[in-house]
Image: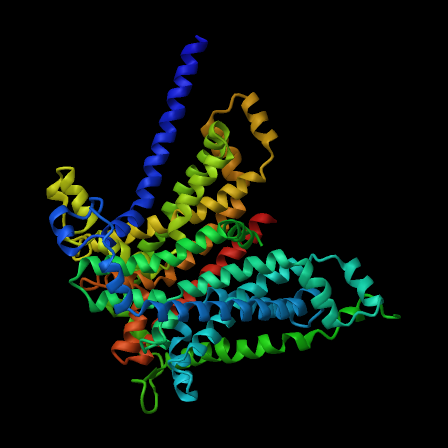
Length: 280
Length: 298
């Protein structure tokens, strides 16, 4: 009896693992397909189909696509915009949350509601007035325009999250520091910031990746080729080279690649961050 | 130190200054301007002409408007309903069974793998799937032919009857990892003694799942449902990269319809109206949801 149930247990154990592995492979297959077909020549795709492994690591398509989309420039644009937004939005969230979570501000609840509403707002509702505004002040088609808007939008989320972190911050510690003659700036930078580094770094990673992945606002604000970001370049390339299949695969591959690197770098922060964000 | 406590926490308003100013200029003012524009007819040049509620009346009788909101509802099915249900079962399975039999590490690898699509830009995810759905050389039709199911092969995104389902399929793929990660974290805070007590009472896995698990992680389920539903209503990028709303109006969504009116058709007033209606729906949904939550907690 015992051995029989052990066998049944072993079978269901391995069966469940097999089913799960098949599911996981199905989820990961789009990444594999894009990768395979990036390293094929157009001729190889037509003769052997999209599902086959590439015969050799043919780098021609990738190299040509890299040059044609001017990928180095796009990478730099994305890097500059994402880093700037991450720094600025963390800073802005910090200042807002310092006032709302530590200080006593009149209208605190009202301001928090405003920030929450800003998080849920569809970007289309800001799009045209901002487009018109940036055109009239000469910021249209500049990276700065995208940086400014995304900073404020992300800081709404950051303010909301950090305020709830700060509102449970040890009051004894703050009182003690203040009695020791610490002013508000010293309190912020010598006590609050060092002690909330984990929350700040989660926000930084989040803002960086959200900005990297942003599409709608860069699409309407960045028209010239030299200003565009990686996701934008992938979308533009796709419309311009409708008929070429391996270069299209390569441009998708180049769109995915940086994110895979971020994923490896930030995996822990990301999964920790989304659960923190969800529960606050 | 006579007014200890209260006075210590005063005078922080200065720190709010940059945040509030930026908020006014870049969010609140454009938001109000957009509502203002929704009552006008404007091509983007010259002066907007006040037309009252005419844009709203136009929306109600516009089949594209209704098609776009119908497709947003279908995206809620693909991005909220399916991923939440699948995510619940998958999270419970990974947590209860896989982590127990094969260790925490194995469960974490699966979790990370299912989460992976979430980290790529949606517009790029759309390009990847457009490639997979490609009629002649796409991987999906390739797979069907390989399996001998040639008759099922079709131009998925080009066919009126399948385009929206193809978009939905891609969104399910994209979205599964999000509820999974949140639910697995939620399961960690449930007291294992509850399960042990239930097991002693002879409860089956399904009974424990419905009576304990789902019941106790309700706050996380609520957050997932609200955030993904809002996300589904706002969706733009994958429609842009996969179908541009086509064929016909088969995959049009509210935000893409509004974008078309702004930047392709120079109907700025009408675009603003659609964006305003979309915002109204999202805000009402959020408020209603939060009210329902707080009432439940009381």
